[in-house]
Amino acid sequence: MKPMQVGLIGAGVVATGVAKVLERNQNEIMRRAGRGIQVTHVGARNLDKARSTLGIAADYSSQLEAVATHPDVDIVVELIGGTTLAKDLVLKAIAAGKHVVTANKALLAVHGTEIFAAARDKGVMVAFEAAVAGGIPIIKALREGLTANRIEWIAGIINGTTNFILSEMRAKGLDFGVVLKEAQRLGYAETDPTFDIEGVDAAHKLTIMSAIAFGTPVQFDRAHIEGITKLQATDIKYAEQLGYRIKLLGITRRRDHGIELRVHPTLIPAKRLIANVEGAMNAVVVQADAVGTTLYYGKGAGSEPTASAVVADLVDITRLHTADPDHRVPHLAFQPDAMSDAPILAMDQVITSFYLRLTVADEAGVLSRITGILAEHDISIDAVLQRESAEGERQTDLIILTHDTLEGSMNKALAQMQALPTVLAPIVRIRKEELA
Ligand SMILES: NC(=O)C1=CN([C@@H]2O[C@H](COP(=O)(O)OP(=O)(O)OC[C@H]3O[C@@H](n4cnc5c(N)ncnc54)[C@H](O)[C@@H]3O)[C@@H](O)[C@H]2O)C=CC1
Ligand SMILES: N[C@@H](CC=O)C(=O)O
Ligand code: NA
Image 1 (cartoon, helix red, strand yellow):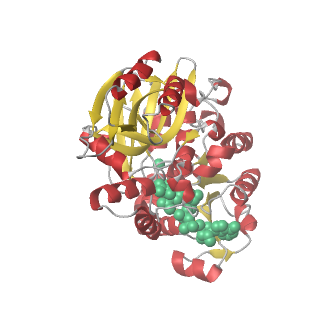
Image 2: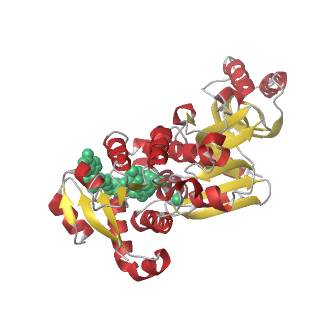
Image 3: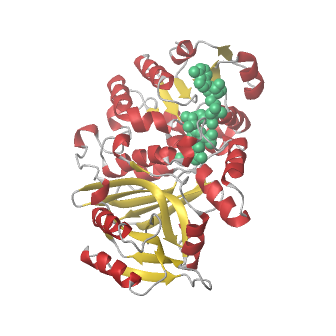
């Protein structure tokens, strides 16, 4: 049988990995897919550069749209990133009856609903395993492997760049900027690395996982997003003293009245496996009713790990290409007419626990005033740590860990505590999850 013909758009880090993996493993891939898969067309900005980085024989063109709609192309692989040109090309490819594979989480988190609907109308597939946690087959796990389950929550380290930065800063005491440059050099970071460090990339991925887990449309604009740029070394140190690690977590959880969707630095008990995920590695914990807790771990970024997921999607599409569209795995796991309208909860409706660091005057009665305010808002305390102040020092650090509470109650308590004359600096608040 004639090989499936692929139009590859983009010739960067991931595209290079795709070319290499397809070439190196072509025999095995053919045995698995039942027919060959070949990149026949490449769309790129700089053709000479693309030819030399990809190193494959194909028709190279700077007319990206022509590649996306070429009559000889069966599957379009979009690897340019961004949400404007990429959206246009993906929709044009779909309209031309092409299946699409993309690693572009930004595109799907923002425009997924429109893209999946267009694909359904045309009877083509849009596959995106590489878009969440790179090489870890988490989309397949959520959409197919766990399909018997009611999923309760997902918590993940889903941005390699920030986990790499936090790990290197903690282990080697390196500077934020130095480690970010190294992450860029290694090909982990987004074109605009603020997407990584401000938590936006993690929120894109979390939005996609949440939609698949709970059968809701993708709603990136409802996600609460905090990155790691305001995190201080002092808090990483105090968290360690209390038996916790701080990670940038994406958390989505089913509650009675809606769904939590949030990305922020989070204290996790150091004994949990996920707390020990270091470097650019990703890990996703899924809590589901029948299977219990499962953990998925692996490389979430980088050329070949991401290509592993892109090529797996190419094989999937090749296998399913002739199947009746109504009997294929739905894009977001649930049938389109059975989607839920559960709302994404506003952040003050979220239930979580907290780490607080207060810089306070070292005098009698301060602790009781603070615990009094927390009690007034029904916030119970899990642990308190007070730094021994040095001889003659008039202020100290007070660290408080709370039990679960409504974020809205904590906001009110924080405003009251901050107004106390004995609280001498802005209070640091980091959320904490026991993940059990
Ligand atoms: N690098 C990684 O580890 C991972 C990347 N991704 C996603 O994969 C996609 C590709 O990422 P990378 O390969 O890392 O990016 P990259 O920056 O290395 O490559 C992007 C390619 O697209 C081309 N391109 C961009 N805009 C273009 C335009 N307007 N016209 C023509 N060509 C254009 C660039 O010249 C380059 O060849 C992105 O959506 C990214 O978020 C997903 C998972 C992991
Ligand atoms: N910039 C991303 C790349 C993979 O999605 C990351 O650092 O995880
Ligand atoms: Na993946």
